[in-house]
Image (cartoon, rainbow, N blue to C red):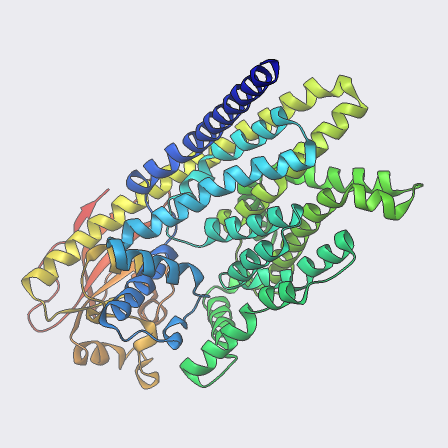
Length: 522
């Protein structure tokens, strides 16, 4: 009877532990999910590229629905993993706009949970790991981009997942996530080397199955490029052309002036977080200190999780800086730092724990300093969210104006470089022209208007930051001034970000100076 009683008590304790664990994880999921799911419906896409992704997603979805999808359809300006997943999901549920944002949101939730798990592996402290989780889950910029139809958050989720399963020595699972990450961002191709190296250090062996899985992304992508274009290097050539053309249109980015370095550095720190960056360097110093004067192999094995996370962090940082200083990455946007933010958070947690253990009197000072730095970075992050909302409203006003024009005359075409405006208008893509559609022999101020008339283009939409063919030929258009060819008919501006959008109408016999006045929204 006593044995049965003991078994019953143990069963009750086990059930209680399971229920408490389930409640704990439900709390983590709810805390990270609430702002991100709400952001899907109430926050705008934070960057114009999101609408280019959405166009690709809808094109893939349409081909899948028509039964004409093939592997070569995955070819595009970006690697296709995110677009493909979103297209498949929206094929089932529809609403590709919200599905794309929701995929990012789910990945954002996953990132928060993995930050907790990796922090727990590094620190063995639930309290410190919860603090790391909370700082990521409540980060305004991470919430914003978790509600944006782009690859920054999904790629971070795949990379962090691969790292997490590698720390658990679940190599095949880690390889699957690494391959998916490599099919989304080219910088993750480094995992082809890093993951087997990590496995060898920990297990003293390398699995060829793991190597095969993790290495599948580059040859598959090269094959897709070859099938789609006949050129296996088409992706790299296209990106190189983009960089060359961008620098030609923006000569300021060809030199590393103090103003450029200051702006890009500020963007990077806004998202990466100064405390996280300092924590990563402090972690390296602490690791080196523990390796010196001891059994090197034994110390490395003891610190292998910390070393692995630091290696992935600094590899990605080195990749970005190398691309930037070789002008292969002309600008650094705030979203680029989000990967370093989530990768560096567990490292910061471990460095904080180590320093507090060695110098207990520093713990309260460090705690206050970290909280202060996070609060300081929150201000520009909230400002960026406010600017995004303002810009979205501005673009929506212009999009509604274009929609009304198209409704009254479906045959009219528009010259517009802004992908977000094209998407928000709901006008079929075939009604838009851009600089890529301009024939070489029409790249002249005297011939360009004739090209527009032949293409039935009546309206040109321009932003203040735009460098398109019309602006190069007629610089005054980029300053909100009409001329003898184009008449300003509408303009709108976003006060907080400085975005200005102008709509010009190509002058014809029926439209002359003074025929109409531009409408303006602020």
